[in-house]
Length: 630
Image 1 (spheres, helix red, strand yellow):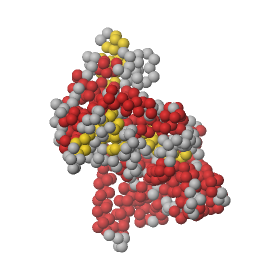
Image 2: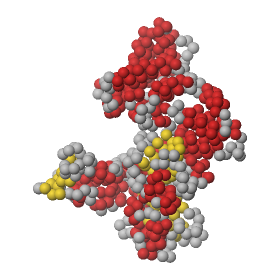
Image 3: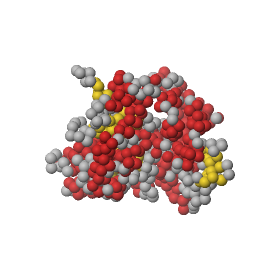
Image 4: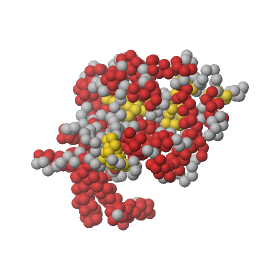
């Protein structure tokens, strides 16, 4: 596995590679440059061609040629290995063997073969796009789509076809001396078509501009073919293979994986996505994926959820009826997954992003993206649905909107939504508020605060007090600390709920605060006291919970006033993780003692089932003790 890495480090000239990205100056046996990994004014990075390493004497950055490319280009380690291997002239087969033997005991030969075939086909497509015979297709991208050569090269756009030879690419691949491809392979990967009657073989993407689709490691797994002629279909995708599935893959997903953006833009087509990059998209803030004209599937959402950094979803679909319907349907899916969902307001009234680029220029694309008038999903939903009131039953629409608000609204924006509904529908504001309160109470009646109830009841019940009361006291103390850190560091609170294994304990007050913070995002100076009051008024948390939280708010305010608390996010994050682990352990122990008490005293339960449950819990508790010893 490590042989390829060792060979790359050994045979790559580190000076040549780093010299591509920064200006080097020789001094003695080494070279020096301004460090690209921190604001450097005096050359502080040293590169040793003999040791094949670099080191910054200011920020401490150090590593080899692979880690330099990885950090400089903000790509994954695997992508950096692949890029340098290609530079050194390694075959696609050897690169594939490294990547896949890294994951499995034996190399899946068919996958390696298919990856190699896709890569070879893509190299031919790129060359054909720039050939004199296909000049009109390159000009189409440059002049009609306003894409630069740099962007065309970045997305490896190509073309399939050469004069009237309908199997030109197929013949080049079959006759490639250093590979052993056959028509069966090409057919399975949608690189050729075979006429069933005549058995005539043609290139699958003949006379189409090609866009490679890649997996998260940057391997080509399929293609999109786009015609500029008056024929259908306009877009052609690779068929399903062991590499590519329409419902499991997203265009440009590999860049999202390597850049870790907080906000993900979702567009319909690959041309719109590429247009955003052409306009100068800030890749530190945004990632972009395209649905390739397909419906958003459950598998697509699972892919997106693999990136733990994404908190915000920004939908930018076509400005037509179909686009608005897709926005409503897909936005709801992300709202249910607890993302902050926003919609780009296309004020130029043209169909899509590329049309904005072509007609109004790069700046206008970025202006649309950063428009302060862009809606959050619920506002967009209200405006769009209210337009249908002339065709549908008004009361039904109002009920649907208020139900959505009860499910996914929050106290910070509640009044804004109600006022917007009143403005668009001309309904009486007080009637809307009363209707909303009824819906909210029906859907979300206040849950019993199980933990606080247990704590109070254990004082009265002498039989369980001996074992459970100390555990509950400790659990309550830990939760108080956790609430304090949530209030202190709202930007990291969004990670807490995912870390808690014991959601069934119904820490409803904590869940509701964290849920609120996740909706608001990293907004500074969140009015936490007002928020808690609103949550009580709207029936989301109990008065017991309110008092529990209020004591912590008072303590936090006192700490801040006396400058005892420093806003150390890293330290707070570590403390939160410790508390979460402690709460998990206490919850296991509490359930263990409660089960034990029931086994001894309750005659109306399945004691064998409880005993088995306790055996499992015992192992969980033992695991916590082992981890502590380590």
